[in-house]
Length: 230
Image (cartoon, rainbow, N blue to C red):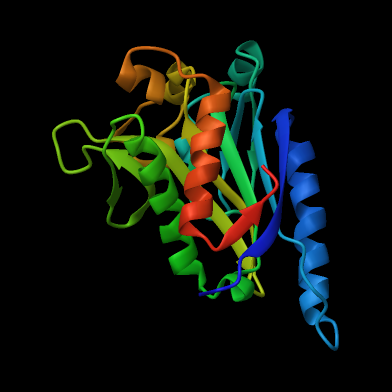
């Protein structure tokens, strides 16, 4: 049985996107430096949970044309936009959305990047099942979907990561009680023929964020060989 990797869990609450990005980058670089040391030093995996004020983020290979609103319009609705160094296209983060940023050492977990992304999807799928929802994958589109092959495919969780020297950053964004109206101003993840949803929309009632955090954290610990202080 693989030994569990001690992982620090930090709940940042509502926090600005750029500030959390900075905190991720600090841990990310510190772990890369530890692995590059001769001999290698122990890494310090961290899992951040947070919510963000309204912000659109565009992945490093994303198409800016998938943002359908002007800077002036974004200012009027109280949102900002940032180009990110994660994978994927454009998405929205806002209050009521659970964002998770795992800074993991994939070598310590015994997996590659593709298996890691699949693991994030699996954890969200397991968490959704606790609410009676069937989350699924969609070929060629990272994330977790509802009814992906049906008449109304809709994404409930976006995933976009960065990995270097086996260290990860960025992560996933699960729509819990998110105001889905913000998605009308983008082609979410570059798609024009698929929708978005949230736990609240699917269940017909708001979901306590603390409950969502607990269930997702438990699912992550089931899928990955990690032990957290959460």
